[in-house]
Length: 153
Image 1 (cartoon, rainbow, N blue to C red):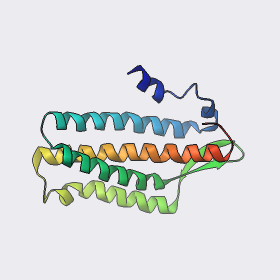
Image 2: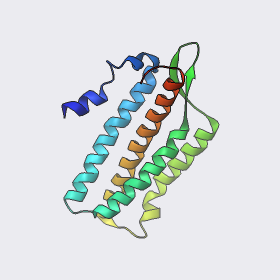
Image 3: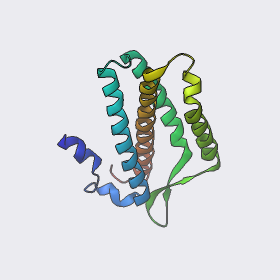
């Protein structure tokens, strides 16, 4: 458990001074939400509300959507501030609109095949995958940018 908490705390990491505070805060929020949703997903699997295959399928679908959702924010190097920063672009807004449309219509889309508590558990699986996918995508982008700037990660 201590290792996980140390992993989430990047205060001591030398590259932290080259990452915008807002971006660090956003990643930390995604971590917290991702951990909660993954816990809910695992609880539903262990309690037998949903099969592991369906849960894993939802999680993998969520990972894919999470990597796509990473496109919402352009993460780039800001020369004057010498930091990695993010901003929302036009294509990102379009991706975000599709993401919101999917989130709103998720029950309608999957409600034809899955019902009741299984649908709720499946939704948790998708959302957990989305959060983990977004975190992984953002961290990968940040790592690549810092490497391009010759900053050790």
